[in-house]
Image (cartoon, rainbow, N blue to C red):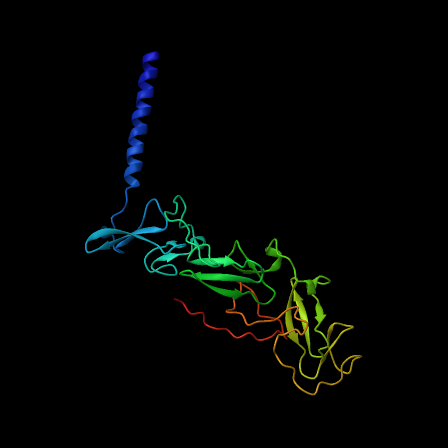
Length: 261
């Protein structure tokens, strides 16, 4: 019986060695010069790839913060943001982060240090400030603007403490008011020939206790005289999938193309 047991253990060891050898062969680095694309990802590091140059394989690194996605894919040079897909499953990154002002990596999208409605897009270490619109907040996990209920840990603006989705008078203005959306104020304007009623907190036909019929169209600047808040144009509109257009009466916000280095 003891001899049979020894033979059995030896067979198991042989099978294990054969399996290990076969697995090692499967993990052998693919030669890009033997592929149609002439480019393949590294088997160990997701931020490196091999390219066939002059008939010989050469190793390249993706820009700092990006990982290999495949030829003609991603945001630049076949490399993409690591959260876009499962590029790094079973792999690790070879290069540590290189930080710059507002950027944890030279390339990426990062949350704002003091605002829940703003974020930074970093391209080769240059940060561009972006703004979520329509009452949306920046979601660190999704790397995009999202509904406030999906974003944890953000402080609401004091103007909206009483009602996170209500209206708030704007100083002594008869035409403009703050509309709170998810706890954050957005500057709004009453339609032509209507005024904002401080009692009902909505636009009504004048006169009211405080306002007569408006004689001129109100300006669209977003400055609040007491300095509490100042509305600025966003760099770009960034809405999550399926988000409907802004509600009627919202300020039109022009889109501006963001230059890419």
